[in-house]
Length: 237
Image (cartoon, rainbow, N blue to C red; front, side, top):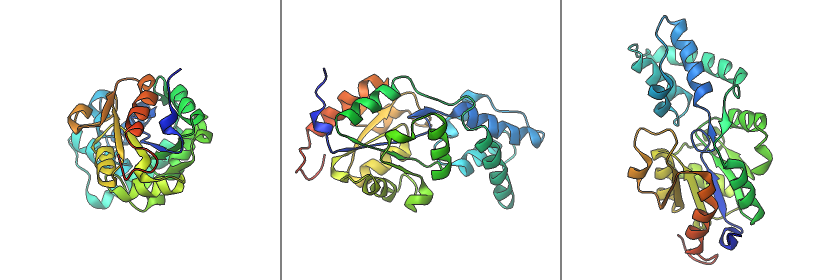
């Protein structure tokens, strides 16, 4: 059995879209409904997938621009409201946890880690998605930018998440997939694990994570290695 003693009492904070859950099919399907309502061609999943991770407004703006019709700023609030209404109704039609997620969460929780979600998705939508997938109960805190009053890469988003989870940022590992996660972790002084399969316009390997993983089976051991280098009374990782 893998030694996970170092994770006891630590916070493992997760990005949601593209890290814990493959939400791209439902997000891009919603974007494409908006595009088609405007008479525009839908975007292929592979093209639009990297636009996910900075919230719905960013996805809409990038999506319409990629479709050749950048939206006027005064139209964005209406498009945003239509997007949210449609997405909420289809939030888990095709979205599923990435392979190995549930087993990794359970292993970390059993070892005494505090688990949190630190996501640029709104808190209510994050909870709705995690509820639909039966994952909510595994987390000590679920924090969107509305609840933190900051959005990644702002470190305040991560520090607020850690505080709500009852932990210490000096014994925290941020698990993500993109530059927003890397920026928040580095600025907050947390450890950084990135997944290689997420949604990012910059390859995760180029974001200089402490550890890059290719499957969630690798995550518990990666957290043990990072936190093992930072005893409970240490000043940081």
